Image (cartoon, rainbow, N blue to C red; front, side, top):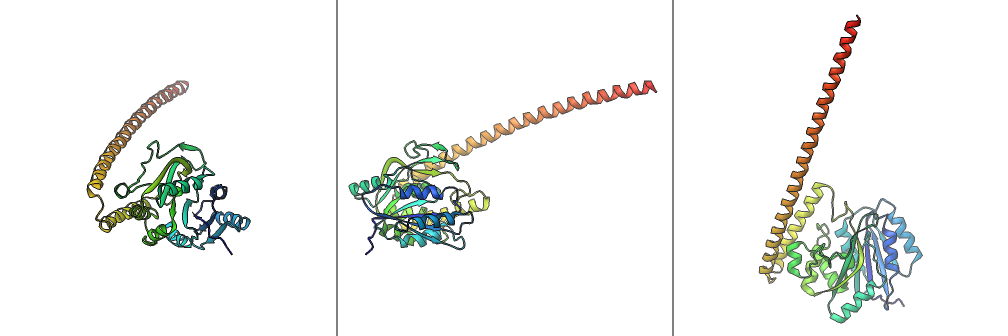
Length: 315
């Protein structure tokens, strides 16, 4: 008879070939006093990710279940498919490019959840680049990215809780996941809003995950149209949840939005001044270039004139 795991770790992957093996190893290396299994879903990768996942699943058949899409379906659709398949009482999430950096990650979070009685946990995180080089340590604790630990913060700021650190009770995570659209602009935003209406968030100020800043991913699109669609989709979710939970603290939401608007004004002004300074610097460089070219042309023309005079005299 199979034993139901305490936690199912869900890892989704789309073209994470350079990192997926490291990520799965960091999950499988967890030291826990309870059982866990791993569900990996490859969303139609074209970079060899599927071959790596298949090999790891075949090597660890008692721990790893792998699913493969023939065509890319998108992260929201993939998460909606994977989440209901979890067998554990709890679900942990790990994106395919964010390795866990502590072998006791799951144990620490389950201990905290048992202590607090909350049904959702997150932790601090480090930030790394595509090559794994540390960019920033302790992103939440140092205020690099604010932790959205209330519903109001999440709604007003399009909040961030670092989804690759999540551990949540399976029933409420499945319930929240069922509410999002398969083509949602972000697969985590509305889930966070739903979770925060059902439980408080247990936060551990310990970095357990390396968040990879991977430009071109779902959350950081490179193309203008993709970015525009994402921002508009998040806006639509914000407006929908204003109506969905009217009992929320609207005064707090307004205060947060006012502060955020002021911060954005400062950021826009700062960037405008930087652009202005760069434009002035570029204008000065161009002026120097034009002056140097003019001087060069004058010297060259003078030499040509003298040479022409010499030839004329010889004739």
